Image (cartoon, rainbow over all chains, first blue to last red; front, top):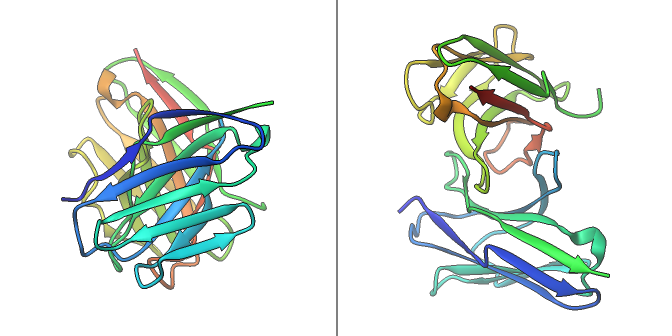
Length: 111
Length: 115
């Protein structure tokens, strides 16, 4: 129940396209859902996060869509750029506890 | 420094040896976290410090793993009798520590290889 599932494992998108990464969870006690971006040789960095009382949050080219009833959330990267090529992790948190991370999606944006 | 730093960046050791991994958090951050990241996986929580004390060590896999933060700043993760399965990148993160949702800032990690 503490798992967060993530798909796809890898994704190839053309420059200018939309990248979509999906995550699903079972534990309804999760109440905070961040996305992290990780470049090779670096630690993960927070990209955007959402709470379950909101169905969508947008920051620049990055949007989280949240479906509470389906226990799913997704990251959309609009106008994908080669510089977006990285591994993306979704995560979930129960307030006062610790993050559970998904296994990651390796995104490659072709020029 | 501007961010979280970790030393060494790479550590190669032999099975059965003892290793220490160091983390320097962002100045003023009271919360410090250790994670382990295996190849192709997301970070896995190990231990969380609030100040000098370990507030949650439920992620430590066994008693060969131990971490300290004696002055509430620098932390050291210690692994005794290393095993090949301990090979991974060990990540440290720090946050302001007021809320569990405070942004965690990660260091670049220490890549541990146990031969």
